[in-house]
Length: 180
Image (cartoon, rainbow, N blue to C red; front, side):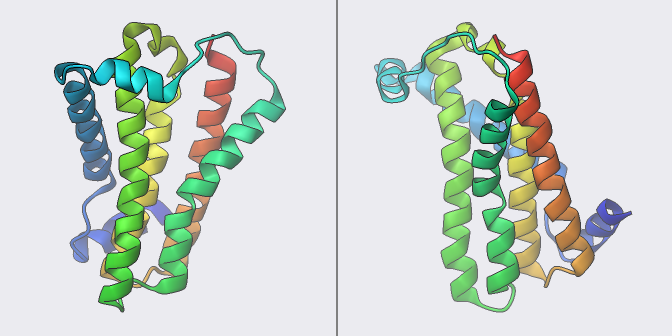
């Protein structure tokens, strides 16, 4: 019910659909990965920057909770800012916080895309959670975009506030249990 209300209200306020936000993130990731592959020296630079250690982990509840909490801190912030600062009322708030929200998305997407481009197929077994994490990023961004166009209703706030941590909890569990 809540998700339907969000979709109906955001259509009338000209906010892009959640699917469009998710697709835009995926396309940005593909573009970033492609650039990392094409630009000479970008793979090596990315590897030296990330310094990933592809090792096996023992799945634990504390590891999943740690991953969940880290991701929640980052992705709940755009919703919290949207509720507190009401960006639909102020151009300054909309621009300033919008730059910050865009930076969250760009950093997440470019980091993952760069890692995939730099490490190649060796990294893929470590990323079964990636579609879920990208979905959580998309929901977070969608909440922000919707809030820039209209005041979020209580139902929308509660829906976003439930979906973001739930998706991240599933992603953290998948990351903890299904990676090597």
